[in-house]
Image (tube, rainbow, N blue to C red; front, side, top):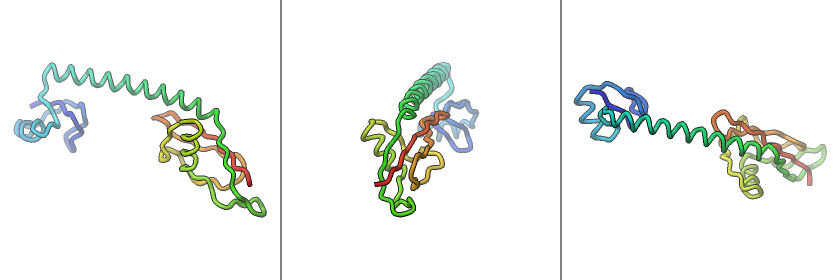
Length: 148
C-alpha cells in the first residue's frame, strides 16, 4: 500500500514522502493515527500545493530576515559598566541584555539562543556579535561598552 506521510514517522520517512508500507501497518497504524493518508491523485495534488506554499513562505521569511539584517547592522548598542583601576569592569553584558535593548529601543525581536559563539562581553570598547536571523542570514550587532 502506498501512503503519503503527514508527519515524520521514525524508520518510515519524513513528512510529505510517498512510501510503500504493508497494508495492515498502513491501515491500522498510520491512517488510523492520522500520520498518513492513502496515496491518490487528490492527495498528491494537495501535497504538491503544500510544498509550493512552504517554498513561497521560506522565500518571504528570508526576505524579511534580510531587511532586518540591514536594520540591525546600522545600529550600535551602548552599554555603561562600572570599572575599576586598569580598565577592569565589574560585570559584563550578556546576550540577554542585548536582546532586551534591541526590543526596548528599536522594537526588534531576536532570539538570544541564535547568537553564534556568544559570550558575555566584559572588555571596554567596541565588540561585534553575530546572530543568525534565518537559515543563511547572519547579522552583525555592534556593541559599545564604556565606563561609568
